[in-house]
Image 1 (cartoon, rainbow, N blue to C red):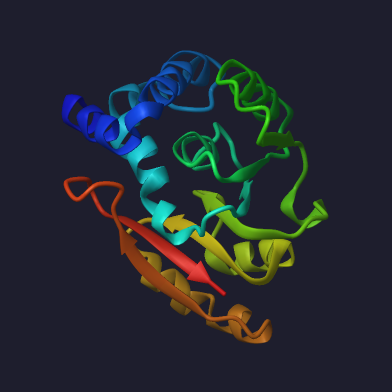
Image 2 (image 1 turned 180 degrees about the vertical axis):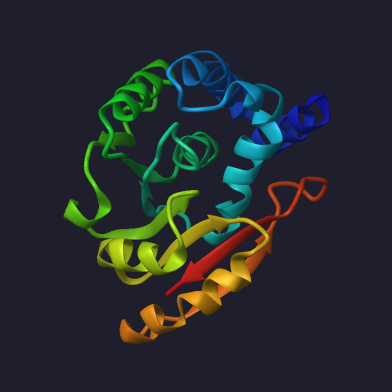
Length: 202
């Protein structure tokens, strides 16, 4: 945990105090409210924070981002902290999670460019440069729910595990029906961090 925290300090630089505050919120209220398991506390930096911001290199400067099924705010909140150029919507249908997100955004002073919207992806009207999602659903369902949120020329970026290639294969027909392509990228928040697998749909 100490090594991952040190990597995060290197990645976040002047924003490290803010992301550290967010980790404290996750480790306390996030666990208390059931958004994270009690065993996740020791793995927050590596498994959640560094994993979330690994895709930062795939998001163009000044993008509008919607984080679908944001849950505890991953990856949307760490991305917003790291990238002050981004405007982020945290899209979450469940009331308790949306309340958690609203409190976190307020405590982290992100309200000028981060907004919490309580809705399902398929019911949300809006167009974004980038749609992110993490541990929400298999790719074929994500494509069904989320592609209507992506502006022309934009991307759906789905954070996945090591079986990402298998998900692309399984979603082939859903992608073909919509004229979409998908490719797996392996990215890292830091050269010494664990790899993160991202499916980019465009």
